Length: 179
Image (cartoon, rainbow, N blue to C red; front, side):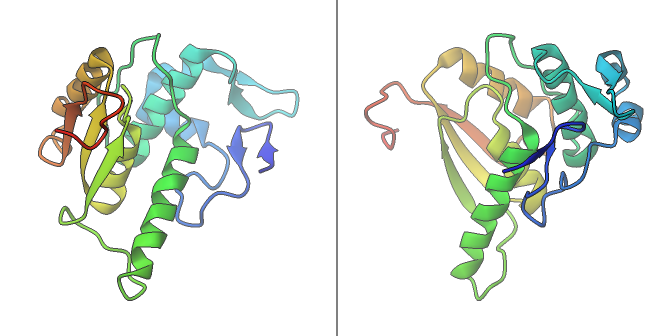
């Protein structure tokens, strides 16, 4: 996949992916002003961030989640992975396409679609995007108690997610479907 180096967005994302074009930093800053502290002008005259700076990427993710997915709270400890939102959204859109194949070509929406996310991580990113894009409900599992607690905090602080995403601690890495 080729990347547009000046903006950090991929050129070959899923057609329904909201992140198909360059990041609109002016818009993102208007939604999440904290992002402005991490922006810079590239040699090409474009606005971007330093994608090697974890704090900049984390702040970009917060702005994307707020702007495109109505997520007001998304805090991760610095020790946790910070997933790139566009790629994770792509994954959800391809899952939607697969589900449509067994639903007369129509993407199933709403919380009657229940998805299991094994190893959701602290970010709980797949359930967040899946619910906000398609209304799906999720059972998310995690083996790390701290990551589970972080994911639960994110869910509790975003009212749209409260009744749609359940996070469960899986005490055994070898028994992913137990409990």
